Amino acid sequence: MALLASCTSAEISGNYTIYPENQEKDIHPDTHLKITFASQPIVGSTGKIWVFESQTDSLVDLIDMSIPAGPTKSVKNPEATYTSIPYQYLPGKFTNANTKPGTPSGTALPTADTFQLTIIGGFTDAFHFYPIIVHENTAIISLHHNLLEYNKDYYVLIDSSVVSSAKGSFKGIYNKNVWRFSTSKNPPDLRSKKIIVDNKGNGDFATLQGALDYIPNNYKDTVEIFIRNGLYEELIYFRNKSNIIIKGEDKEKTVIQYANNEVFNPHPWNVKTNEWPGTFPSRRAAFAIDNCTNIQLLNLTVKTLLQGQAEGLLINGSEIFVKGVHIVGSGDALQTNGSACFDDVRIDGGGDMILGRGPAFFKDCDFYSPGPFMWTRNTKANHGNVFLNCRFTGTNPNGSTLARAPVNKGFGYPYSECVFINCSLKNILPKGWGTVGEETKNMHYWEYNSTNIDDGKPIDLSQRADFSCQLRLDTDKELIENYSNPLFVLDGWSPYPNN
Image 1 (cartoon, rainbow, N blue to C red):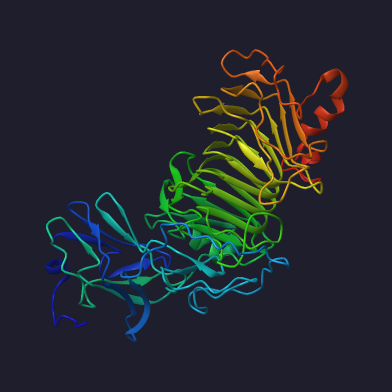
Image 2 (cartoon, rainbow, N blue to C red):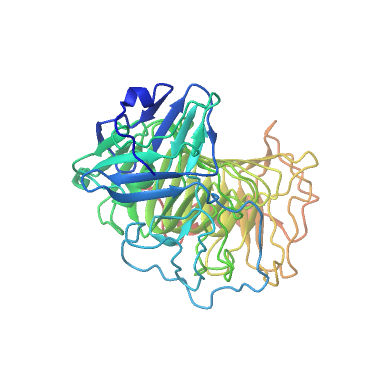
């Protein structure tokens, strides 16, 4: 790599623009680098991107475009087993700056460096990621997380093969004086208890992940992260966090998305996931809350852009409150484990759209799925999924089912619970429910006052599956009242102050 002797920014970048601009100051350390062309650029499969600290010319980050982003075909190990001991969330702050991406945790094998790897949210096993994502005419470069620091000056070099424009005008950047920028002198003051995320650079952070990483683990004070309108193309994962409010400016205009699924970020080669508590955490969601307490997610959209086992939102924690959120996923669009409440939430997804072990309370929510809408795997230790005043629209032309609980690789779900109270349904098969295991006496597949979405009339329940039950006000009043109360469903916790 040879540096040009002398060349101005204008001479190099006459056919494109860069962000941050050359010599720009007060840039957030979590900022994505951007190159905008006159037409849509093409991402190459060779070449490198370097980031250097200017004062010492020391290498800070390197992205090698010859390394693929992640796998595109599913590879399964039939000999993988569930971890015999609960997964341990170790204390400490692990980042790309102090830990090699792919360092195993729990009982997992190391993650191979065959594909791109970056540590997100302290998960040392790391995630596959896309170094460059193109939106319209802009190539957005995602560096490895947490490597840039406050009060530093950096310069960027890029091989000409990394990205190209239709006219072939990009010749690379090899001069350290062409793309230089300085980061903000100081981080925001947490004592204000509010952080602003703005991908245009006018807040405290440019990314939601940057803001989440900044808040210390298990922080005692409540901190609000306010996200201004915009498209945030980032994979979100955070663990060991408490007392955080994540609030978007507008439900449909504040969008957090990523192309992720079980194929792109699979579970470790030797470990099965998602069957019971204490297993290895999943890496396949676009937005994951892991081992957290008292988190609020409000007024925004989260979505995955891939199909398959691909959650828009995945939750492992307790006292998680989700309100005014639009979730878009594929199969398993939402996975929820631990006490969680969903209010005025819309979910668009595929079959088994809601997965998890509960307990989960849903109020005034809208669901769209070809069905089954859920596969609830709770044990007798806690409640499953309870729905109050919700609406279910089946998108299968032949009719959809509400839930199923079949035996899965030898494991059954005899205590599976799905309770519908005052819900409205459309395009649901007369039997209502899908396949379940042989043990059904302790299952709670219950309905009370199910009506038709189109006309509000009671639904004919005469052909419902024989393992289900229709509650009646005259004989089941106490049950109906209990299951209408989130305090009863969620192990004594309610996000509503008057409960």
